[in-house]
Structures are given as C-alpha cells and as structure tokens.
Image (tube, rainbow, N blue to C red; front, side):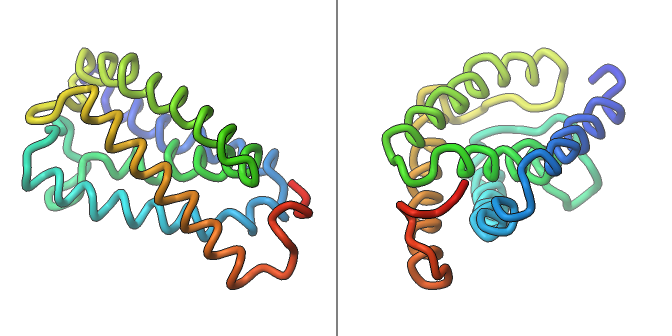
Length: 160
C-alpha cells in the first residue's frame, strides 16, 4: 500500500475530529453501543481470520488484527453518528446502514484491495453485505436493551 502508514493513520484519526460535532449528550448515550460493536467486530475479526473470509495484506503489528484501524476509526465513530440520527426509527436506521454498508462493501473494498490493504478470500461481497446486515440488527437490539435497562428517558422522547 502506497504511503500505507499515513493512510492507515488518517483513516483511524480523521473520524475522531467529528466527535465534537456529535455533542456530549449523544456521545454519552451511544458510546456503549459503539463499544459493544467494536468488541463484536474484534471477535468477528478473529473468527474471520481463522475462516479466511478476508485477508489484510497490511499488518499493524504482529498479532494485531489488520482491521483494527477500521474498527477504532470509522466504524467506532460512524456507529455513534448513525445511532444519533436514526435510533428510534428502525426503518430509517436499517436504510442508512444498508446504504453505508453497501458503499463500503462495493466501493470501499475495491479501493482497499487496489491499495493493498485488504482483500476478500472465502466470502463474496454479497455475503459480506449479509454479515453487515446481521451486525446492524445486533447493534440496534443492543441499543434498545441498553436504553431500556440503563436510561431514564424513553426512546421516543429522547433528544438527539
């Protein structure tokens, strides 16, 4: 990957510059869901590595998942943004996630492959889309349960 260290650093750090725009209340509200999804993605990454679903040609460090920059950068911050604007309206949430995940799967993966970051091995782009869809539903379910158990305000009346 040309200038790989710079690209990986930018991909990891740039999304964090948008955090102040989210607002402290929304950040605090959706942080647990984002942490949950990051941990879920780490577990998925280990499983996918063993099943050879994809291969990261770029290694951050030995014994560190190649997708870690994606997880702690755009996926972590993007989860908070998507929840902020769509949580409480499942169909909008699902629609936005399908669009974002499709862009990542069909355009982003091509760009990553072309730049030597990652390539799909034993999973097709369609199958990757299904994996993303499952994670989308799991995240929404987690956030629903979290809010029901730990938040005082109702989902419908919550400020975004």
